[in-house]
Length: 95
Image (cartoon, rainbow, N blue to C red; front, side):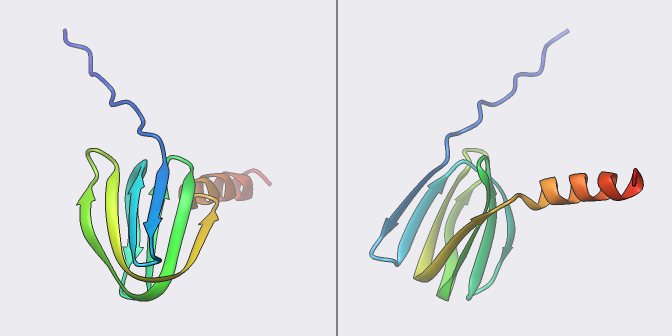
């Protein structure tokens, strides 16, 4: 029987050029996006980009890479939504 090989978790790295182009690695999921906000799950938690004219130029989830473009006005890291949901729901059940 063949064993399933797991992919190594890519390191999270963020490189921004002139507040207009962002390259990220370590991406696990695109949560939401529109031209004013993009939210991503990374191996280090969730990250949200806010700005104007934002769009996902390139996305390769197999490699955990994404390239964003637009006018970046804010970058915020926060707790993963998955962690909030799992802990919050179980916490409510066992209170």
